[in-house]
Image 1 (cartoon, one colour):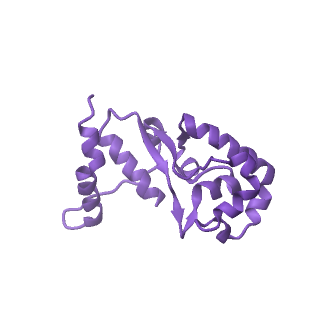
Image 2 (cartoon, one colour; image 1 turned 45 degrees about the vertical axis):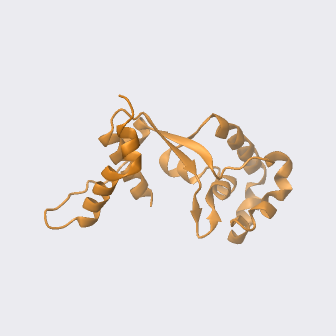
Length: 158
């Protein structure tokens, strides 16, 4: 998944060199586990921070500071929780003890950005589009060129 996201981002900025930052909304889930809160409280960084060098926007920075403070104080307790504690059904109960600190603050749905320089630094293996093969990558590049995101950026003034 990381390679796919990195390749997509790199493709996007290579096709549209005027793009300076790519903004993301972090609603990462894996097997019904809410990743932004879980990863930050157990590891000290979100998935986008860890694998893509994402930077929080201004509003997210404030929330991030609160979560980092809680992570620093209770990291071991969070790491000991079963994975079910982090799913959509149980996350409120998991974090209820920390409500005074985290009330009305959540990382799921928060905004982040990745700079063009960071994206250019991604180590992406070279793909060759073969004449009679390589259909998956050829389909990927065609879909990226036809995507709404690309069309939005095409209309963006240089």
